[in-house]
Length: 469
Ligand code: SAH
Ligand code: SF4
Ligand code: F3S
Figure 1 (tube, rainbow, N blue to C red):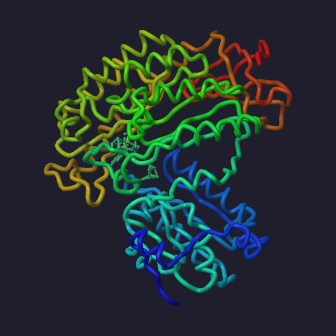
Figure 2: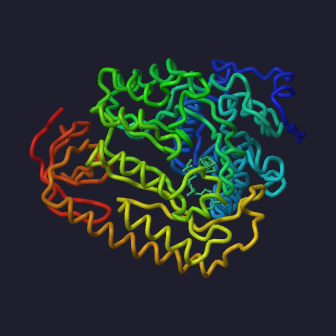
Figure 3: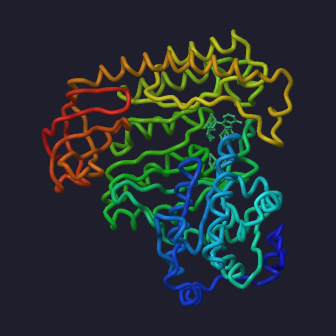
C-alpha cells in the first residue's frame, strides 16, 4: 500500500483532487456506512454533514458496523477519556477487514487533527483520515482509499474552500430540532484546551449561508434551530459585523416558521448587553443558556486565561436574570486545575450555590498534550479531584432537587419531539427540560401547553392542556 500524507492544502491541491460528486455516486452505489461520533454538539452536527455527504455519494447507513463498507469514527480529544475510547473502538473495528478486506476505516474530527500520522502508526488499520477542516474532501479521500492508497489529509490550516461544506445537505434524526453550525474554531486561548489546535481560529459562517440553511430546514418541518459554535457569541466579529451575534439572532428569528432558537456555547466575555437584549426581545429565543464558568476562583480563572473574574461572571448572570427572569442556566466546570487549593475550590462551590444552575457538566482537569496547563506545576492528584468532584455533585444534586420541585404545578410550553409507541410523548420546555405526556401522533412537532404534575432533576411528567401551534 502506498502512503500519502497531505500536510498542507498546497500539496493537496497540487494533486488536483477536486470533488466530482456524480462520479462518486456511480462508483460507490449501494455501499453501507457506519458512523460513530464522540464529543460535542458541533461534532454531532459534523457527523450529520458527513452523513449528508455519504448519502450524496450513494452510501446507505447501517446500525451494525460489522455490515459496513465504510466505518467513520468522528473523534473528540477534549480530555484523555475520549482519546482512549477512540483507540479501543479502532481496535474493535479493525476486525471488519477479516470478513470484508475491501472495507475502509476512516477517522475524522479532533483526535485525527491533533495526532495526525501518529494515530495511523498506533492504529495501522486506518485507511482515511481528515478533520473538521476538510470534511468536504471526503469523496476524494474515499476514492483514493478505494484505489488502494492510504488517504491521510490532515491539514495545518483550514483550506480556503472549506465553505464548500455548506453546499452539502445534512442527514438528521430529529425532524423538528436541527443543529446549525454558525462559527468554527475558537480565538480564545484557555490554557487547558485543545480546541484552538484542533478546530483552528474563529471563522464565522457567512450570514446568507446560515439563513439559507435555516430556510431549507424550516421548509423541511424543523421548528427549533440550535445555532452552534465553540464560541457562538463571537459570531460576526471576523466578518466585520459590529452587531455580531445579536444581529444573527434577529435575522434567524425573522425567518417564517422558526418557532424556537437555541445556541451553544456562549462565552461570558462575549455575552454582550446587545446579545442579552436580543435574547430578551426575540420571542423565539429559548429561556435557556449554557454559559461555562470553569472555576469560581479568580486566581484559577487567571491561570486558565479565561479573561474574567468570578464577579464579572456573576454580573453577567444578574444582567441576564434582570432581562429574562425565567432563564434556566447550565454550565461547565473544571475540577482540579493545576494549583487548585481547597480555598479555590470553595470559590467554585460558592459560585454554584449563588447562581443555582439547572444543570452542570463537571470535568476533572485532564492534561492535554501541548497545552500550557499540562505543564504547570502543582498538578492536583486524582484522589483529590475525585473527592472535590463528589462534593460538587452532592451540592448540585440538592440544588437540582429544589429546582425540580419549583417546576411542579407550573405551566410550560413544550415542543413535542418523539413518541414512545405507548401513547407517551416527550418534548422539551423552552428551559430545556424533558417532559413526558400522554397524547397521540398529531402532537408530534407541535408546541403545546403542559401542566407539570411531577418533576425530578432530569425529567418531568406533564398533562396536556392545549395545542398552541
Ligand atoms: N467552548 C466552550 C467549551 C468547549 S469544551 C467554552 O469555552 O466554554 C467543553 C468543556 O470541556 C469545557 O467547557 C471545559 O469545561 C471542558 N474541558 C476542556 N478542556 C478540558 C481539560 N483539559 N480538562 C478537563 N475539562 C476540559
Ligand atoms: Fe476551549 Fe476556551 Fe475556546 Fe472554549 S473558549 S473552546 S474552553 S479555548
Ligand atoms: Fe471534542 Fe473537538 Fe468538540 S475536542 S469537544 S469534538 S471541538
